[in-house]
Image (cartoon, rainbow, N blue to C red):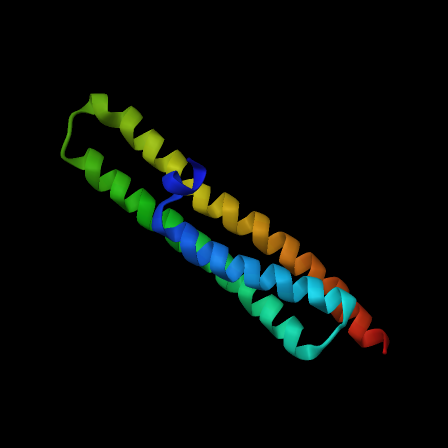
Length: 111
C-alpha cells in the first residue's frame, strides 16, 4: 500500500537507496574509496528522486483539484500525503546509507 501510494518515484528511490545502503555497509566492513563513492552518490540520488517524486505527486494533486470545487480540498490533502511518502522513503534510506558511508570513510582515513 505504501509503495503503491508513493507512485513511480519509489522505484528509483529503492534502486539507488538499496545500492547506497549495500555500498555503505560494505565500506564499514572493508573501507574503500569506490564503495564510498557509490554510497555517497547513491544516497544523494535517493534524496533527489525522493524530492522529485514528491514534487511531481504534488503537481498531479494540484492539477486534479484545480478544476474542481472547494469540496475537493480533502482530495488534495490525500494526494499530498501520498506524495510525501517518496520523501519519507528517500530520507530514511539515504540517512542509513550516509551514516554507514561516514563510518566507512572514518575507517578508511584511519589507515
